[in-house]
Length: 342
Ligand code: SAM
Ligand code: SF4
Image (cartoon, rainbow, N blue to C red; front, side):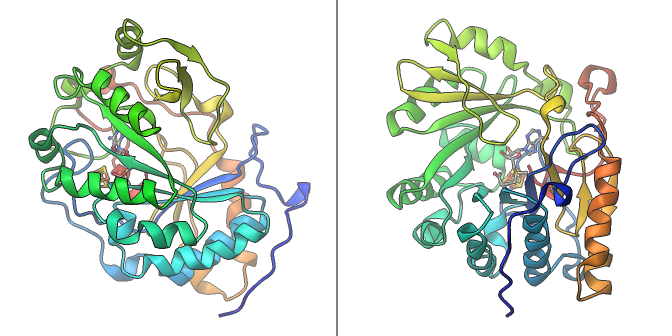
């Protein structure tokens, strides 16, 4: 396959939206499929997309390369579960070539189920940081929330990743009545291993089988409770994502909060998301979108693709509109997180 040398984007090529925000972070969902069925993310009986609708790995590589040409510095692969996509390591290999150029990092968000198999290889391919989602350290509860997952496999994968030298961050969705008594334990477990922990508020995305108003837990309350046991001081740490961090004095690690519902993080939004079918969403919480699959498939050169990027920048909305109380159990946005990528 052709190896294109990428030079850093000049200012006029950069992706800048109509509010002057520079987009330099792209999350790409490589599959809508998953080997888990987390209750807040998917219904148990999901219908997945036919394979022909998905971007091929070659198309994702081409797309990612075009983004890098436009000044994108960080690419996160997500899903669904990215590691269940066949041959996904090929994509990591391809993306690694840009790490010698203008791309700063390739990262991964995973449920950890396949991590033991791939961790060492991934570190060799220039991946330095991974996010692993763990909502509870109780094996029975883990099975309840993921429906199909096994905690021991995930913990084995996390150990393998840490041994391979990957920096691990744990993501935990905060769920009322499920893990609300566990955050102290999760924080000390992470602290013992040198992992940062990020807590995420549930977002009303996609139809699931549960009532989200029952599950919603404001992180402002969680933080207040944690402050009774831990010394938390605001940190200037930034990962390019939406989390706001505090330093945890007792562990020397960080605790992040992703609070789309209680705190609007849109003003500094630097990212866009591409679904596994090649639809570019400019905001996780809005329907504004631009199709990239057609431009990719219509032409072997990238003019149409770049024109689609420009159109997207003009259309990127100022912010999202998640208001869980008003909407009740109905999703604000009908697509699942596994389509758009978390
Ligand atoms: N399968 C991988 C995983 O679980 O990490 C990657 C995809 S998953 C959609 C990415 C992140 O989104 C996970 O941390 C997951 O817990 C989170 N997530 C999924 N649905 C969510 C929702 N409705 N609200 C908040 N976070 C959600
Ligand atoms: Fe799968 Fe991740 Fe969604 Fe859980 S959160 S069902 S692991 S995509």
